[in-house]
Image 1 (cartoon, rainbow, N blue to C red):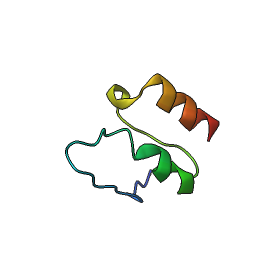
Image 2 (tube, rainbow, N blue to C red; image 1 turned 135 degrees about the horizontal axis):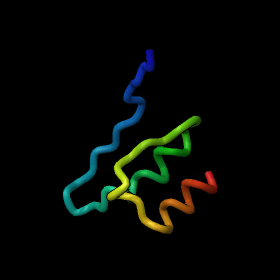
Image 3 (cartoon, helix red, strand yellow; image 1 turned 90 degrees about the vertical axis):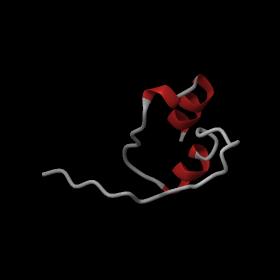
Length: 51
């Protein structure tokens, strides 16, 4: 059985790009990060891979 838990939520105003808070949120995460492929960008993907 796989257990899934939400461990981080970031609420922003409507004019903020959904990808912007990801980099700061992943600083405290370890393991795997899953998200919708439609939100990934080249620079974000590279930044996450580096972390």
